[in-house]
Image 1 (cartoon, protein in one colour):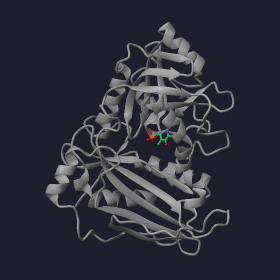
Image 2 (cartoon, rainbow, N blue to C red):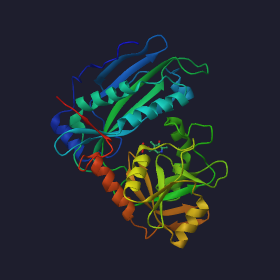
Image 3 (tube, rainbow, N blue to C red):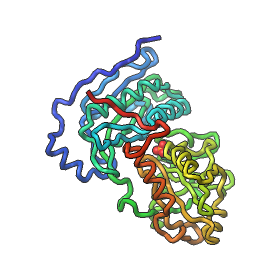
Image 4 (cartoon, rainbow, N blue to C red):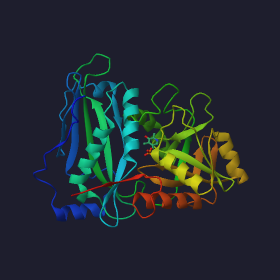
Length: 365
Ligand SMILES: *Cc1c(COP(=O)(O)O)cnc(C)c1O
C-alpha cells in the first residue's frame, strides 16, 4: 500500500480583504460567490492519485480535447459546512457524500477516490476558508467536490487522467423568498433517468438531461419539475435535483423507493430517520401521479415537500400538469415539513442533540 496522500497547502497570496469578505457574506445568494481556495488532486493511470494540494482558487486550464468536454465523464457532490454558536466548524454526514461519490465514479467508469482523501480535501478546504462560512441559521458554506476526465483523447473509452477538485461557495437560501412554498410542473414526456442508466449517480449528465424540462416548468409558471418513471409514465420519481416526500393521513410519510433511477439523497435518508423517530409511519413505496391527484382532491394528502442539501426541506403548494392543476393542503408551508426542517437544521448547527452521530466537528488549531 502506498503511504496516505496528504495535502500540501499553498495559501492564496492575494486573498479577499476582511472588510470586502464581510460585505459579500451579507448577501451571498446561492452558487455565485466563492471562497479564496480550492482543493485539487490529480489521477493518472501511471501514478494513481497524486499532487494533492490546497491552492488559490484559479482557472483550470484544459486541452480542448479533454474527454469531459466531449463525453461528459463527470461526477460531483454537494455538502455544507456550518458554523456552530460556539464558533466550531461542522460538517453533516460527509462520509455519506464520500461513499456516494465513489459509487457515482464507478457508474461513470472513473477511478474511485478513497473516502479518506475526499474527507481530507473537504476538511482542509474548510479549515483554510473557515472565514467564508456565513453566520445564521439558513446560511452555510456550500462545498462542491467534483471530478472529471482531463485526458486529451477523442477516442471513446474511459479516460486515463482525471482531476478531482473541491470549491466552496458561501450560501444563503436556495430558493428566492426563503420559506415560501414552491410550485411544481409534472413532466410527462421528457425524462431524466431510465432503468440501467445513470439516475442513481450524481453526475452532470443527469442535470443536462433535466434542464429542458426545468425550463419548460418555468414556462408553465412553476419553480421545479417533477419526473415520472420512463417505463409506465406513472410513478413519481423525483425533482431535477431534489427528492420528494408526501404526508398522507396526517402521520404517514411516503417517498418513492430507490431503484436505480432516483438519487439516494442524504437529506432524504436523514428525514426518514427523523420522521420515524417522531412516531410517523414511514413508507418507501411507489406513489403514482394518479394517486397524488386523487389524494390531493380527497384531502388524504396534507403535505408535499422537496428535500436536498441545497434547499433542505421546501414545501410544495401547487402542482401543474398537462390537464390542469391542484393545490396541496391549504397551499401554505406544512407543519410536518416545518417540524422536520427545524429538527434537521438544529442537528446540523449543533443546536440539538446529535443522537445518530451525524455531525463531524472540524478542529481548528
Ligand atoms: C444531490 C441530489 C439530491 C439530494 O441529495 P442530498 O444528498 O440530500 O443533497 C436529490 N436528487 C438529485 C438528482 C440530486 O442530484
